[in-house]
Each structure stands twice: as structure tokens, then as C-alpha cells.
Length: 371
Image 1 (cartoon, one colour):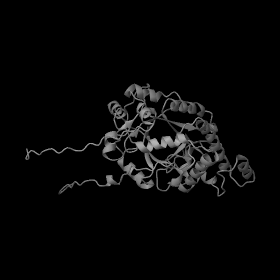
Image 2: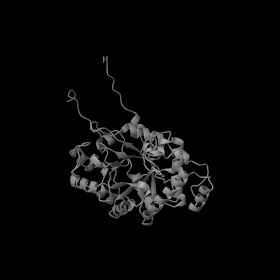
Image 3: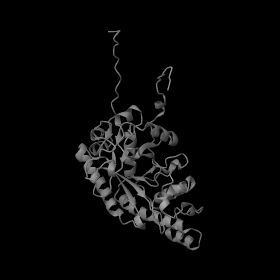
């Protein structure tokens, strides 16, 4: 490559980034605990990145490993609910563990690896014969009783796929009701990575995905009255962008090879905010590595929170810290940075005592010629 000159100019696009999210919850009947958590997230936005970690089960081994490594616990405990083999029984321990984390002062985050209804249940489109397109209906079923829906199914006005979806939504809502009844707010992320074709809820196209999102949102919010949920949209494309009145936080999942530096991921942050608008919080819902905190503040890509996935992203086969995606020193540095909120700090700040990050003004230095 031959160059005559290299021009360097100031980056002005960073000025387009805004942290002035409105903090209004999509559910106008949201409970006080959800409002309080959303208020905290909004006040902390742009000032701090809230730490989060996914756990593989109710034992919290990943959280304890982080404490042994850094001397800190993450503020958010993320876990993924499932209906493996059309059974919801495995979630009870996870729900109880989530409640215990909240009682210990932390934030609860949940997602749903939704196995499709039918005889070939799977989250993956290639492993199931379930087609979301066969479930879509023009009938307004979101707030109907199960008896009414069962009647429509019996009359042949609803497909077996649609009936199965409703039963699954109702079963999951029943699980989440136990947290609502305890006054526990939840960062709730259903139908993740909707722009991809690997999960069945994304494989039928954007229109069907949006229909399902609206069904899940309306049934859980209006029919079951789950006023403790803070909704995270993780569709990850303009095509799958749902009505902005049906979600509170926009988030993206970012996985890189273990040879790539994670950095701040400014491009993804800026693109997502441009897509959904500055009134929504922007978060890193799944990642293979903790973001570079210094770079995030430098690049004005201060994620509301991050959620590091489990497995070898955090733990090796011996149950010790895995440095496959991030060095131990960098991990310790991130968790002890003044720019993040860990569990101990969240407990101190959650009642409104959120100090602003100090602003450093560059000092003028004399040139050699001036001196």
C-alpha cells in the first residue's frame, strides 16, 4: 500500500452518543420495585457499568469464583430458565436462587431458552419441526382465558402450534409470578437474538418474531399482571425492532474469538442507540469477555450493564478462573475499576446515593520551545 499522506482528524461522532434515557417503564402499571430498579439503572447510566454474570445452575459457582478472583461479587446474577422436554420443573431451583440473590441485596436477571412446543422440542430451528409461522393468528388471544383459547383450538380456529405457545407462556408466567409475589424486580430478556435463524422464534422471519413478542409481552403484562418485569429487547436488527412501547432496555450479544480484543465495542453501542433512540438504555446482554472499562468511557460506549456468559468464558474444567478470553489481571482490573458497580457498591448506591464520575480536565503542558 502506497500513501502520500495520512490525515488525522477529531472524531465528532462520539458527540451523538447520549445517556439521557427517560427511564419510563413500558408497563404503565409497573410495581414499585421495578420502578425503583429502573430509576437506579437510569441514574447510573453513563456514569457506571453495572457488573453481571450468568450462572450455570443454582449453586452460583461462577459468582463465588469471581469473588475469589477479584474480591468482589457482580451486582447482577443472570440465569437462563428453560422448559426442557416440555417441562418447567427445572426452574424452581433457579427461581429460588434468584430470590435469595435479591434478598442478599443483588439484582436479578432472567432469560428463557424456550424449547419449542410439540414432539421435537428444541430451541434450535434445525432440531425441531415446529414452525412459528403455523402459530401466527389474527385473533386477539393475548388476554383470553385458557378456557376460551382451548375452545378456539377445539373448533379448529387456532393451530396446535398456537395453542402450545400459549400453554408455554402461561407456564412461564406462573414461574415468574412467584417473584412478583415476593416483590422482586426482574431484568427479563425473552426471545433473545431474534434476528438470527438459529432459534425457532427467529427462523420464520421478522414479522412472525414481532407477533410472538407482542403476544408474550401483552399476555405477561396485561393478563398475568407481571408488574415486576423490566423488558429487554434483544432482537439485534432493524427488521426485528418491536414497538418501543413494549420494551425498556435494548441489548446486544457479542461473542468474539479468543484471539480478538474485546475493547469497548463502540460500533455496536452506537449502532444500537441509533436504532432504538437515546430514550432507551443500551446494555450488553451477553458477552464472551468483560468490556474494557477505560476504553468504554473513552469511546462514550458506557453500557448500562454487561452479562458475561458462563463456561470457559469464566471458568476452566478445574473450576478455576479461565483466562481463555481475558487475562486474570485485566479481569481483576475491570472488577475493581471505579467505573463499574459491583454488589457491595450497589448495596450502598441503590437508595439514590449514586456519585457522578469525576471529570478529568486535560492539563496544559509547556512545549520544549516554550520552556
